[in-house]
Image (cartoon, rainbow, N blue to C red; front, side, top):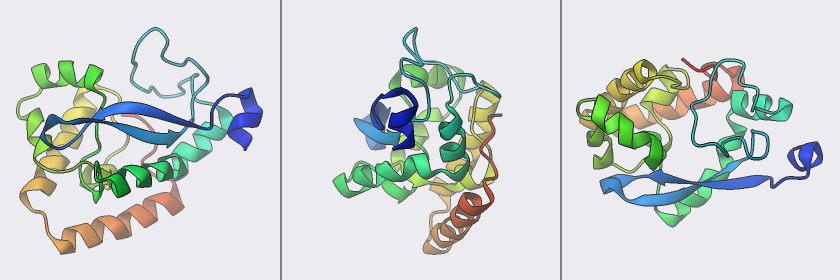
Length: 167
């Protein structure tokens, strides 16, 4: 409700992402940015990003903005655990710049993942490379134990609001 009161815009937005086997799908999130935040094209989040609303900062810190993605899990586009899906427009450059980037497509993307609980938001090529290393570790070592550890770390991240600053 606070999202709507702030600027009378939509509460939930959808955005195209890339999932398993390179299949595109829509992800749903609580809106944390001002209306038309990317009208000039996709941009990475930056430290002290002026496009993020006051309530958006809180939603991002606590990761509450991600809750509507449970719809994607129920539809089968996402899993609870796995690499975070990225936007196709941004992936064009990432695939050119980062070796083995497309290995992320071997598994369903996740609501949470090894990279999300061990590294901050990626807001640069170096940040994406770091997160990819965590994603590839997860893909190579998938197990119920690691998934359980990610679940525990996700709960800790939500309650401590750590890792929400871009790197």
